[in-house]
Image (tube, rainbow, N blue to C red; front, side):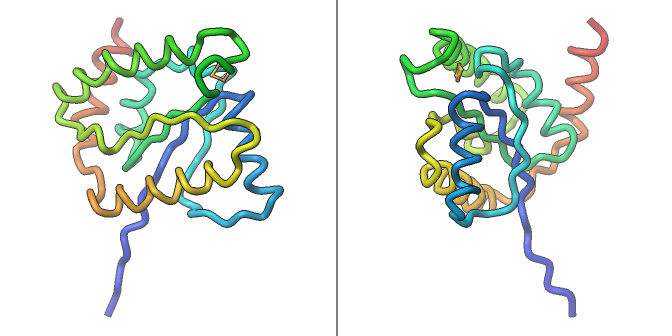
Length: 151
Ligand code: FES
């Protein structure tokens, strides 16, 4: 008898200077964490187009992490504050599309916080396991296609 355990697919959009370096430190410190995450690196969270979150859901992600430098530590001064503001307005689109905002974790992880990165990934994986697989990906993929590719 097959016993299939749900292993969520998590996509992490991170800034190069803080969270990516923090995730790297997790590895070099040999801190173990859930292997469910694929990291997409940006120069700064301020450069993240939040429509990419929809693209990730449309392509099969079950959960998403967005993480960058702590407030006042952004290497481009205020990119993380821009990202935070964009995230707040983006939430209404998630509501419109029926995506549970619990599927997205917004956090700050510095280059020195390897342990925090591991905990963030583990907590996210646990929460997404409770929520279950994201199943409306075709609807979101269609929306993304119409809104982004047909502009
Ligand atoms: Fe990390 Fe801007 S460089 S959030």
